[in-house]
Length: 83
Image (tube, rainbow, N blue to C red; front, side, top):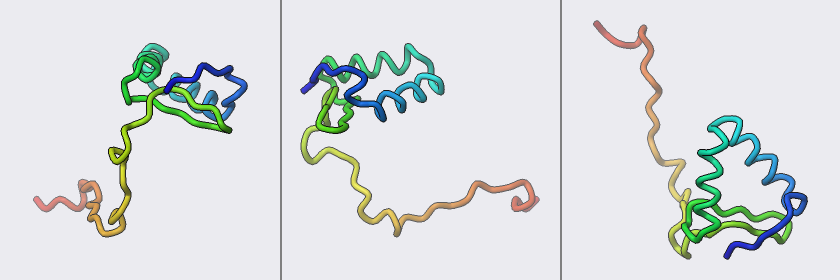
């Protein structure tokens, strides 16, 4: 599903990928993007009618249904731990 596009076709994605490279390292991010380009569903981006990478197969995406009912415990602080 990879469509080769110019960076100017996807300016928001380009900026986001640049931020990811700054945070996680150029080679780490580039290797994931290459895997998506080569058909593995690990990277897919879509913006303004352009797309790049390999999307997840239908029905395998992340679903936020019920997220409001999930319990999230705060990280304990030193003061909250009974000794």
